[in-house]
Image (cartoon, rainbow, N blue to C red; front, side):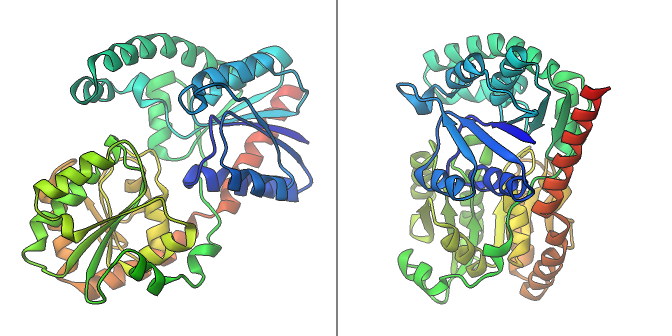
Length: 393
């Protein structure tokens, strides 16, 4: 079987790990996989080549800022014959719908989340408050035009998958269509191997006596890393050896650094930037508690990674983390969404009870086994079989 996969970009991170790992398993089963994208890191491309996945890259000037145009051009140029098309991440569903229009090939939309810009008014409100006014006007115009195109693209999908129950609910509200839930996962082996803990402590100047809170993820507004920094401020007087390590990069980095300085905790915060996978695993193993203050995260690998490393998670009771974290058993889910006070109280509860935190981490390690990449591949395989059967009928 020949499978074409569409994604707007592949960079280091959850998406950059998951897509290659999922489709490597399809290649191992004897299928031919081609991946269409607008941007890809050199390391990921080398991995795809090694795993015999063929890549097709649409390059334009200002490529990293024009991935929407990349997707449209990819779809309009598409002419090869495949057995099935798989779209992964907005706006690749637009490219895939155009490819289906040109070739008549069945189309699966594996929705990671409907675009927040198109379907969540809060996103536009944030842009209006924190970004230049001309950016807000452009975003407003784009959201109205793109919503029409996005609705058409999803109407062309033969099967819709969602990475969580929460995302499936969002799909229903956005498109009025039912989605089958297939939780996405990743290769667990690096997370159970030896990690360079001492080297990471030295690299980021982490004292041996420090009690580490770890907040991994991209530094984007919706990740609410500011809540983690404010939590550190609230708890640092009570727990004087407390430190916060933040990994990842994004447009909010300078804003977050200024917040740490304003709150007087910059000496207790380490901005690790983009870390390698072994370093990421080491930071999980170094910490006592993983902070995941994101709001309405569609699924979220952070909770899975933390549980796999035997660490308790503190998150808000919303979105994907509310499905993966079991409140009171593998971590704590805060009901007061967005509340710094409630979030810091939950973190303090675990800091005061290290034995309880370790018990939660151990239970999380067991629970993480429920979410495997093999289950992701099996779910996608069944969707492809259903798609091809419906086409045959």
